[in-house]
Image 1 (spheres, helix red, strand yellow):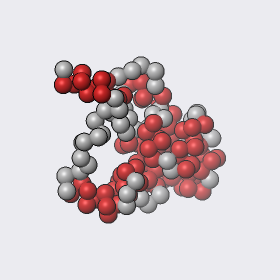
Image 2: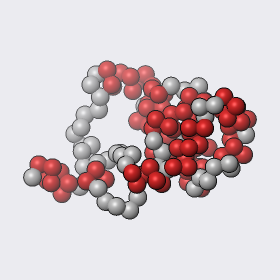
Image 3: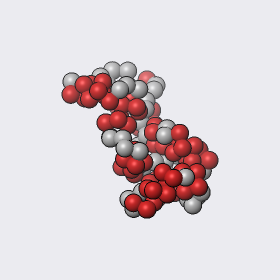
Image 4: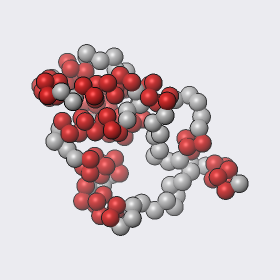
Length: 135
C-alpha cells in the first residue's frame, strides 16, 4: 500500500479500500471460488496445487496456507471473502475473530458481550494523527 491515509495511523486497522482491493484481487477471487463444493474439495485435498491456479503473490499464498488471518487482511484480503477459508476448515467467524485478537473464541465472545475492546491506546500509532482528529 503506497498512498498514505489518515486511518493508516490506527493500530491494527486494515481498511479495505480501492488500493487494498486491487492488491488483493487474486486472493479474494480464490476465496470466492470456495463458494463451489467441488472447489472446496479440491482445496481441502491439495491446497498448494489448488492455489497454483490463482496468480497469488508469495505472501498471499503463505497467509492462506498458514491460515494467517490478519496477514490475509494485510495483503489485500477482504474479511468477507477470507472467512470462506475458515468456513471451509469448519471454523466460525467467532473462532477467527478470537485468533485475530489473540484470545480464545470464548474470551472473544465475552469481551464483545461486555462492550468490546477499550479504545484507549488503540486509536493512533502517533500523537500527530490524534491531534488532527481533535484539531
